[in-house]
Amino acid sequence: MNGIVRADAPGKIILFGEHAVVYGRPTLAVPVMQVAASVEITTQPPNRPTGKPKNRSTGKLNLWLDAPDIGLSAPVEALLQQATPPPLAIAIRSVCQALGVEQPPRLRIRVTSSIPLASGLGSGAAVSVALIRALSAALGQPLPDEQVNALAYEIEKLYHGTPSGIDNTVITYARPVYFVRGQILQTFRVVRPFTLVIGDSGIAAPTRESVGAVRQLWQADPARWEKVFDQVAEIVEAAKNAIESGEVSRLGALMDENQALLQQMTVSSAELDRLVAAAKTAGAQGAKLSGGGRGGNMLALATPETAAAVAAALRQAGARNTIITTIDGGAAR
Ligand code: MEV
Image (cartoon, rainbow, N blue to C red; front, top):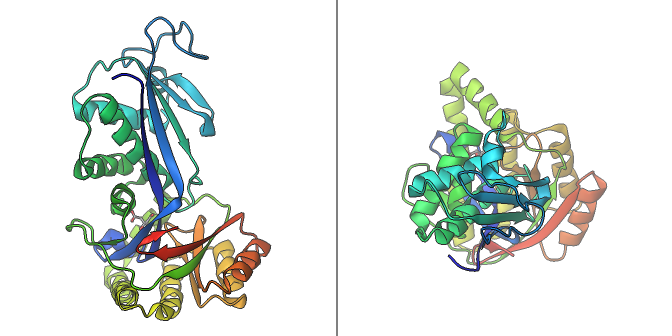
């Protein structure tokens, strides 16, 4: 490889169906194109590494990782020897192993992202997808989407225990997705655009913990929770129909119903409930948490006229950040 290889991947937001998706129920999610993870790979001339790593070995893997957002700049090999190696270093090793590359050429990998960490916008999966695309291309074996997705899922499993695969799927294909675990990818059509306001609670969403909490509930009383997951599935089907028939005003009540079930699953929180209530008081037609919950993001259905007031109310109620976005043809822009 000569020069620079670069790959970008968008964020994602789950509209309906989080958690129940882990138990085989459908979910609806869309890419969020306003944020992205980027990976840039450059060749490091053998005896003249640029910048900080001057004259230091990059180890057998010959790879140097720069991730300024999280303060990392080190040889991948050294990072892998730490007691708890950073996820990015493990992801890089996974990509090399999957491609059968034991001794890659000297490369410098730079990872940046505008997707807030642990917020429900899929930051981890987006970094994995961008990394797999850029590194496989830099190693002369660019992968098709199907393999990018499969490898990103393997990396997700290292961090989330039992992920459904929704994050890596919607981010790899950058399309709206109607997703059922283990089934062939389906997309859905957005007939009439609709406006969402996304509010970030500012609290890291502990996805592994919340997925584990739901699993404990389910293990203690499977019959009860299977019923709850069925109710979520009905909401998802109704939402898909509403979006595909342009009756988007029906989405508000469906969000409220989904939120009530997420509360039963114990994955909402006082902060998320406060943001949901504030959005509705300010005119949102419905609101719910999005993603793993107990932190991270919530979303509210608004109109172009009410969106600014809803966003202001969210910030006043403690949201660290808000995004007003239109779901238009599928992606959030
Ligand atoms: C996390 O973005 C969504 C969850 O449903 C977990 C998963 O699907 O793996 C909570």
